[in-house]
Image 1 (spheres, rainbow, N blue to C red):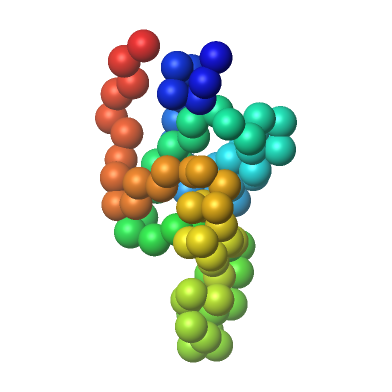
Image 2 (cartoon, helix red, strand yellow):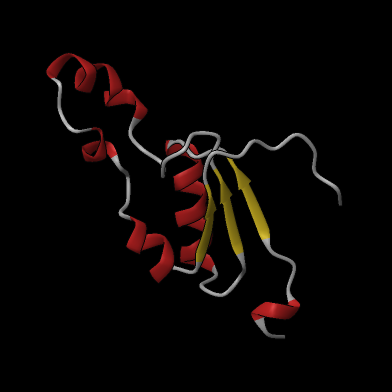
Length: 89
């Protein structure tokens, strides 16, 4: 069965946990279609360090958990600035 014939997985939440789920799934199955839905307008970032960043005035891009290329290289579709209101099975 090809990846196109398989049902994909949608991960809701672009925080550290969502990123961890994406990586764990990708480690187990490099071909399953994955979509990560992030409510914020940016890729997953380290929210734990957010206060530290705001105090120091550092560049917020320094908190990114993975660069955009990582998602493309691992076949992960990322939807930023979106919220999930309902899932239909």
